[in-house]
Length: 62
Image (cartoon, rainbow, N blue to C red; front, side, top):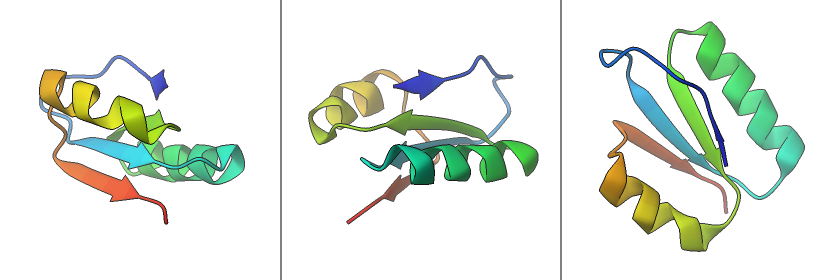
């Protein structure tokens, strides 16, 4: 899981993606746009994360 510390008011976006290069690309774009992205690369880690730190948006790969 890739997560960076952010301000409370910054919109949090959870990225669920098993392809590392695509996940990093999404993180780079979202950070540049002012969002706080978090990357999870295993589906079994999503629910515990969402329960602890609810994101504003979830982007899930297929």
